[in-house]
Image (tube, rainbow, N blue to C red):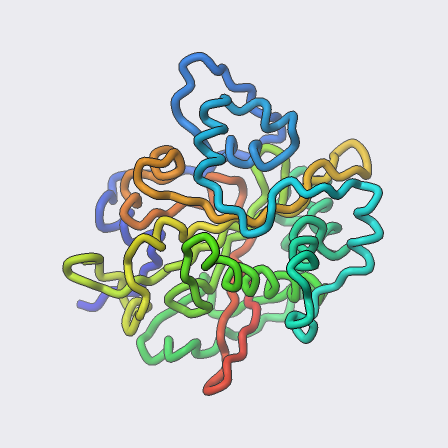
Length: 334
Protein backbone atom coordinates (compact mmCIF):
# COMPACT_ATOMS: atom_id res chain seq x y z
CA UNK A 1 0.00 0.00 0.00
CA UNK A 2 1.47 3.36 -1.01
CA UNK A 3 1.85 6.16 1.45
CA UNK A 4 0.69 9.76 0.94
CA UNK A 5 3.36 12.45 0.94
CA UNK A 6 4.59 13.67 4.27
CA UNK A 7 6.43 16.90 4.95
CA UNK A 8 9.65 16.54 6.89
CA UNK A 9 7.85 18.24 9.75
CA UNK A 10 5.44 15.36 10.27
CA UNK A 11 7.30 12.34 8.98
CA UNK A 12 9.41 11.91 12.08
CA UNK A 13 6.49 12.53 14.39
CA UNK A 14 4.52 9.77 12.70
CA UNK A 15 7.34 7.28 12.33
CA UNK A 16 9.09 7.76 15.65
CA UNK A 17 6.54 8.95 18.15
CA UNK A 18 2.85 8.57 17.36
CA UNK A 19 2.13 8.64 21.05
CA UNK A 20 3.47 12.16 21.50
CA UNK A 21 0.94 14.95 21.47
CA UNK A 22 1.65 18.55 20.60
CA UNK A 23 -0.27 21.62 21.64
CA UNK A 24 0.17 25.18 20.47
CA UNK A 25 0.93 27.74 23.14
CA UNK A 26 -1.79 30.24 23.73
CA UNK A 27 -1.46 33.84 22.62
CA UNK A 28 -0.62 36.21 25.45
CA UNK A 29 0.82 39.70 25.30
CA UNK A 30 2.35 39.72 28.75
CA UNK A 31 6.14 39.35 28.58
CA UNK A 32 7.37 36.37 30.55
CA UNK A 33 9.37 37.25 33.61
CA UNK A 34 11.91 34.52 33.99
CA UNK A 35 13.20 33.43 37.31
CA UNK A 36 16.89 33.32 36.51
CA UNK A 37 18.10 31.01 39.31
CA UNK A 38 18.00 27.41 38.11
CA UNK A 39 16.76 28.27 34.64
CA UNK A 40 18.08 25.66 32.23
CA UNK A 41 15.92 25.54 29.10
CA UNK A 42 15.45 28.14 26.39
CA UNK A 43 12.21 28.65 24.46
CA UNK A 44 11.07 30.21 21.20
CA UNK A 45 9.65 33.02 23.31
CA UNK A 46 13.13 33.73 24.66
CA UNK A 47 14.47 33.88 21.12
CA UNK A 48 11.78 36.38 20.09
CA UNK A 49 12.54 38.49 23.16
CA UNK A 50 16.23 38.49 22.30
CA UNK A 51 15.38 39.79 18.83
CA UNK A 52 13.02 42.43 20.18
CA UNK A 53 13.53 45.50 22.34
CA UNK A 54 16.32 45.92 24.88
CA UNK A 55 13.75 45.62 27.65
CA UNK A 56 12.48 42.32 26.24
CA UNK A 57 16.01 41.02 25.74
CA UNK A 58 16.96 41.90 29.32
CA UNK A 59 14.37 39.38 30.58
CA UNK A 60 16.27 36.48 29.03
CA UNK A 61 18.70 34.69 31.35
CA UNK A 62 22.18 36.08 30.43
CA UNK A 63 23.86 32.72 29.82
CA UNK A 64 20.88 31.58 27.80
CA UNK A 65 20.97 34.81 25.79
CA UNK A 66 24.66 34.33 25.09
CA UNK A 67 24.13 30.75 23.97
CA UNK A 68 21.21 31.71 21.74
CA UNK A 69 23.15 34.53 20.09
CA UNK A 70 25.98 32.12 19.33
CA UNK A 71 23.52 30.07 17.25
CA UNK A 72 22.15 32.96 15.19
CA UNK A 73 23.52 33.60 11.71
CA UNK A 74 22.15 36.93 10.54
CA UNK A 75 21.51 37.33 6.82
CA UNK A 76 21.06 41.05 7.45
CA UNK A 77 23.04 42.86 10.19
CA UNK A 78 21.21 42.96 13.50
CA UNK A 79 20.30 46.22 15.32
CA UNK A 80 20.83 48.78 12.55
CA UNK A 81 21.35 52.42 13.51
CA UNK A 82 18.11 53.71 12.06
CA UNK A 83 15.65 55.58 14.24
CA UNK A 84 11.95 56.34 14.14
CA UNK A 85 12.60 59.77 12.64
CA UNK A 86 13.96 58.13 9.48
CA UNK A 87 11.42 55.34 9.29
CA UNK A 88 8.51 57.16 7.66
CA UNK A 89 10.66 58.68 4.93
CA UNK A 90 12.44 55.42 4.11
CA UNK A 91 9.39 53.14 4.15
CA UNK A 92 7.15 55.37 2.04
CA UNK A 93 9.66 55.93 -0.72
CA UNK A 94 10.85 52.31 -0.87
CA UNK A 95 9.04 49.70 -2.89
CA UNK A 96 9.81 46.12 -3.82
CA UNK A 97 9.84 45.33 -7.51
CA UNK A 98 11.25 42.21 -9.13
CA UNK A 99 12.25 44.29 -12.14
CA UNK A 100 14.49 46.41 -9.93
CA UNK A 101 16.04 43.54 -7.98
CA UNK A 102 19.27 43.46 -9.98
CA UNK A 103 19.80 47.18 -9.39
CA UNK A 104 19.44 47.15 -5.60
CA UNK A 105 22.54 47.61 -3.50
CA UNK A 106 23.23 45.41 -0.49
CA UNK A 107 22.45 48.35 1.80
CA UNK A 108 19.08 48.85 0.09
CA UNK A 109 18.28 45.18 0.62
CA UNK A 110 19.26 45.49 4.29
CA UNK A 111 16.91 48.45 4.68
CA UNK A 112 14.06 46.48 3.10
CA UNK A 113 14.42 44.03 6.00
CA UNK A 114 14.97 46.61 8.75
CA UNK A 115 12.18 48.96 7.61
CA UNK A 116 10.02 47.40 4.88
CA UNK A 117 7.65 49.26 2.52
CA UNK A 118 4.62 50.95 4.02
CA UNK A 119 2.11 48.14 3.30
CA UNK A 120 4.30 45.68 5.24
CA UNK A 121 4.56 48.10 8.15
CA UNK A 122 0.79 48.54 8.13
CA UNK A 123 0.33 44.76 8.25
CA UNK A 124 2.82 44.55 11.14
CA UNK A 125 0.92 47.21 13.06
CA UNK A 126 -2.41 45.52 12.33
CA UNK A 127 -1.00 42.32 13.83
CA UNK A 128 -0.26 44.08 17.12
CA UNK A 129 -3.30 46.39 17.18
CA UNK A 130 -5.63 43.42 16.63
CA UNK A 131 -4.27 41.77 19.76
CA UNK A 132 -2.49 39.11 17.73
CA UNK A 133 -5.66 37.95 15.95
CA UNK A 134 -4.85 35.74 12.92
CA UNK A 135 -8.24 36.56 11.39
CA UNK A 136 -7.25 40.22 11.12
CA UNK A 137 -4.38 39.26 8.81
CA UNK A 138 -6.44 36.71 6.92
CA UNK A 139 -9.00 39.41 6.09
CA UNK A 140 -6.34 41.27 4.10
CA UNK A 141 -6.20 38.39 1.59
CA UNK A 142 -7.92 38.58 -1.78
CA UNK A 143 -10.87 36.14 -1.68
CA UNK A 144 -10.05 34.90 -5.18
CA UNK A 145 -9.08 31.23 -5.08
CA UNK A 146 -6.10 30.27 -7.27
CA UNK A 147 -5.67 26.63 -8.18
CA UNK A 148 -2.20 25.33 -7.39
CA UNK A 149 -0.95 23.85 -10.69
CA UNK A 150 1.54 21.09 -11.33
CA UNK A 151 4.80 22.14 -9.67
CA UNK A 152 7.95 20.69 -11.24
CA UNK A 153 6.23 17.40 -12.04
CA UNK A 154 4.60 17.03 -8.63
CA UNK A 155 1.24 15.88 -10.02
CA UNK A 156 2.87 13.02 -11.88
CA UNK A 157 4.15 11.73 -8.55
CA UNK A 158 0.81 12.41 -6.82
CA UNK A 159 2.56 14.93 -4.60
CA UNK A 160 0.48 17.63 -2.88
CA UNK A 161 2.87 20.35 -1.75
CA UNK A 162 0.39 22.76 -0.21
CA UNK A 163 -2.05 22.57 2.67
CA UNK A 164 -4.96 23.09 0.26
CA UNK A 165 -5.25 22.59 -3.54
CA UNK A 166 -5.84 26.32 -3.95
CA UNK A 167 -4.12 29.43 -2.71
CA UNK A 168 -4.73 33.15 -2.37
CA UNK A 169 -2.70 36.35 -2.39
CA UNK A 170 -2.80 39.61 -0.49
CA UNK A 171 -5.05 42.30 -1.91
CA UNK A 172 -2.12 44.69 -1.77
CA UNK A 173 0.33 43.58 -4.47
CA UNK A 174 3.25 45.15 -2.62
CA UNK A 175 2.79 42.56 0.13
CA UNK A 176 3.02 39.73 -2.40
CA UNK A 177 6.14 41.29 -3.92
CA UNK A 178 7.70 41.55 -0.48
CA UNK A 179 7.12 37.86 0.18
CA UNK A 180 8.88 37.08 -3.11
CA UNK A 181 11.74 39.33 -2.03
CA UNK A 182 12.14 37.38 1.23
CA UNK A 183 12.50 34.07 -0.59
CA UNK A 184 14.95 35.56 -3.07
CA UNK A 185 17.18 37.25 -0.50
CA UNK A 186 17.36 34.05 1.57
CA UNK A 187 18.60 32.11 -1.45
CA UNK A 188 21.07 34.88 -2.37
CA UNK A 189 22.58 35.32 1.09
CA UNK A 190 22.28 31.91 2.74
CA UNK A 191 25.58 30.61 1.29
CA UNK A 192 27.45 33.24 3.32
CA UNK A 193 26.50 31.36 6.47
CA UNK A 194 27.04 27.88 5.10
CA UNK A 195 23.53 27.11 3.84
CA UNK A 196 23.34 26.02 0.20
CA UNK A 197 19.70 26.43 -0.68
CA UNK A 198 17.67 26.55 -3.88
CA UNK A 199 14.12 27.51 -4.76
CA UNK A 200 12.73 24.05 -5.36
CA UNK A 201 9.82 21.89 -4.31
CA UNK A 202 12.34 19.68 -2.53
CA UNK A 203 14.22 22.49 -0.83
CA UNK A 204 12.94 26.00 -0.05
CA UNK A 205 9.40 26.71 -1.19
CA UNK A 206 7.40 27.64 1.87
CA UNK A 207 7.22 29.49 5.16
CA UNK A 208 4.73 29.72 8.01
CA UNK A 209 3.40 33.18 8.85
CA UNK A 210 2.67 33.57 12.57
CA UNK A 211 1.83 36.15 15.20
CA UNK A 212 4.11 36.09 18.23
CA UNK A 213 2.59 34.75 21.43
CA UNK A 214 4.10 37.56 23.50
CA UNK A 215 3.62 40.70 21.45
CA UNK A 216 1.63 39.91 18.32
CA UNK A 217 4.76 40.59 16.27
CA UNK A 218 4.44 39.41 12.69
CA UNK A 219 6.92 36.77 11.57
CA UNK A 220 7.58 33.94 9.11
CA UNK A 221 9.43 30.73 9.86
CA UNK A 222 10.87 29.37 6.60
CA UNK A 223 11.85 25.73 6.21
CA UNK A 224 14.50 24.76 3.69
CA UNK A 225 15.60 21.18 2.88
CA UNK A 226 11.99 20.04 3.10
CA UNK A 227 12.33 16.76 1.22
CA UNK A 228 15.85 15.30 1.41
CA UNK A 229 16.56 12.38 -0.91
CA UNK A 230 16.14 8.91 0.55
CA UNK A 231 19.45 7.28 1.39
CA UNK A 232 19.52 4.01 3.28
CA UNK A 233 22.73 5.01 5.06
CA UNK A 234 22.35 8.78 5.56
CA UNK A 235 18.62 9.54 5.41
CA UNK A 236 16.69 6.27 5.67
CA UNK A 237 13.24 7.81 5.81
CA UNK A 238 10.51 7.29 3.22
CA UNK A 239 8.59 10.56 3.13
CA UNK A 240 6.12 9.57 0.42
CA UNK A 241 5.28 10.97 -2.98
CA UNK A 242 6.83 14.42 -2.59
CA UNK A 243 10.24 12.93 -1.87
CA UNK A 244 10.40 11.10 -5.20
CA UNK A 245 13.09 12.57 -7.43
CA UNK A 246 14.66 14.70 -4.70
CA UNK A 247 18.21 15.91 -5.28
CA UNK A 248 18.54 17.43 -1.79
CA UNK A 249 21.31 15.74 0.17
CA UNK A 250 21.12 15.26 3.91
CA UNK A 251 24.17 16.87 5.49
CA UNK A 252 25.39 19.71 7.66
CA UNK A 253 23.11 22.17 5.84
CA UNK A 254 20.17 20.55 7.64
CA UNK A 255 21.39 22.33 10.78
CA UNK A 256 20.50 25.62 9.08
CA UNK A 257 17.13 24.75 7.56
CA UNK A 258 15.10 27.05 9.85
CA UNK A 259 15.15 30.70 8.77
CA UNK A 260 13.29 33.38 10.72
CA UNK A 261 11.96 36.70 9.46
CA UNK A 262 10.46 39.19 11.91
CA UNK A 263 8.68 42.36 10.86
CA UNK A 264 9.51 45.59 12.68
CA UNK A 265 7.82 45.68 16.09
CA UNK A 266 5.34 48.54 16.61
CA UNK A 267 4.40 49.99 19.98
CA UNK A 268 0.90 49.12 21.16
CA UNK A 269 0.59 52.45 23.00
CA UNK A 270 1.92 54.94 20.42
CA UNK A 271 2.88 55.31 16.77
CA UNK A 272 6.51 54.50 17.56
CA UNK A 273 8.45 51.48 16.35
CA UNK A 274 10.30 49.55 19.01
CA UNK A 275 12.54 47.23 16.97
CA UNK A 276 13.60 46.87 13.33
CA UNK A 277 12.99 43.84 11.15
CA UNK A 278 15.19 40.74 11.38
CA UNK A 279 16.28 38.00 8.97
CA UNK A 280 18.30 35.23 10.60
CA UNK A 281 19.24 31.58 10.13
CA UNK A 282 18.77 29.50 13.27
CA UNK A 283 21.74 27.18 13.66
CA UNK A 284 20.52 23.89 15.12
CA UNK A 285 23.84 22.04 15.18
CA UNK A 286 24.09 19.23 17.76
CA UNK A 287 25.44 20.58 21.02
CA UNK A 288 23.95 24.02 20.51
CA UNK A 289 21.12 25.49 22.57
CA UNK A 290 18.68 25.60 19.64
CA UNK A 291 19.20 21.91 18.93
CA UNK A 292 18.96 21.09 22.63
CA UNK A 293 15.97 23.20 23.66
CA UNK A 294 13.93 24.29 20.63
CA UNK A 295 13.75 21.07 18.64
CA UNK A 296 11.55 18.23 19.95
CA UNK A 297 13.33 14.97 20.57
CA UNK A 298 11.43 13.09 17.86
CA UNK A 299 12.51 15.51 15.07
CA UNK A 300 16.08 16.23 16.11
CA UNK A 301 17.35 14.22 13.14
CA UNK A 302 15.40 16.56 10.84
CA UNK A 303 16.36 19.72 12.79
CA UNK A 304 12.77 20.99 12.58
CA UNK A 305 11.61 23.94 14.65
CA UNK A 306 7.83 24.26 14.82
CA UNK A 307 6.15 27.54 13.94
CA UNK A 308 3.55 26.93 16.65
CA UNK A 309 6.25 27.45 19.26
CA UNK A 310 6.59 31.07 18.16
CA UNK A 311 2.90 31.92 18.22
CA UNK A 312 -0.37 31.52 16.37
CA UNK A 313 -0.17 30.28 12.80
CA UNK A 314 -1.94 32.57 10.32
CA UNK A 315 -1.22 31.08 6.88
CA UNK A 316 1.37 29.12 4.95
CA UNK A 317 3.25 31.13 2.34
CA UNK A 318 4.36 29.12 -0.72
CA UNK A 319 6.67 30.32 -3.50
CA UNK A 320 6.23 27.83 -6.31
CA UNK A 321 7.68 27.40 -9.77
CA UNK A 322 4.68 27.19 -12.10
CA UNK A 323 6.83 27.56 -15.24
CA UNK A 324 8.16 25.00 -17.68
CA UNK A 325 11.56 25.39 -19.28
CA UNK A 326 11.65 28.96 -18.02
CA UNK A 327 11.16 29.27 -14.22
CA UNK A 328 8.12 31.28 -13.13
CA UNK A 329 7.84 31.56 -9.37
CA UNK A 330 4.54 32.72 -7.88
CA UNK A 331 3.09 33.18 -4.41
CA UNK A 332 0.31 30.92 -3.16
CA UNK A 333 -1.00 31.60 0.35
CA UNK A 334 -2.79 28.64 1.92
